[in-house]
Image (cartoon, rainbow, N blue to C red; front, side):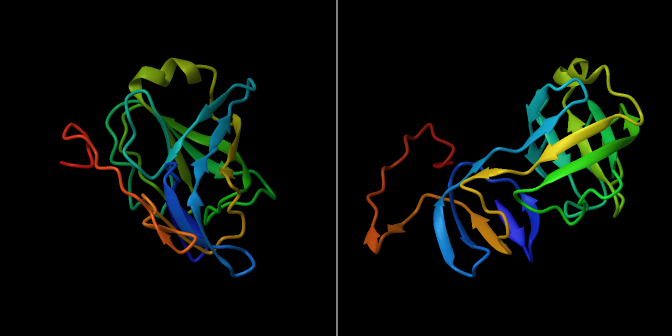
Length: 180
């Protein structure tokens, strides 16, 4: 997870995060992403933020990522804000209303400064078959615990110190990604 000057750059992954809360107090604990998109039919899907999109995943891309999504295949929805909805820079703990401006089927969609791109992997494109230009989506960037108002955050893990005491580390197995 990363928040820079209040802009949400990447999603929490369940590991330990350090942040400065809205009152200016330092905090550190595990943070879970509750990010979800609500489709026009009321169904919901979890999504990641500005990371590699998996073939069966949903990923939201913002201008913080760079000029394009760098994806291959799938379906990408170019999103613009509904009138009076908060928009960019993306913030944690907010609800956004977005209108589908364009639908692309080739991947690697350009990210304009005023748009977000919702990318669905090739295995999921059937789930959004009812989506068309003009459809309205609701995007939530909630987390547990709530980090709403945080200006700075960084995630990683594991915690090395908790309540002033060194934590016991458990060595990962040799098959673990942590060892590679």
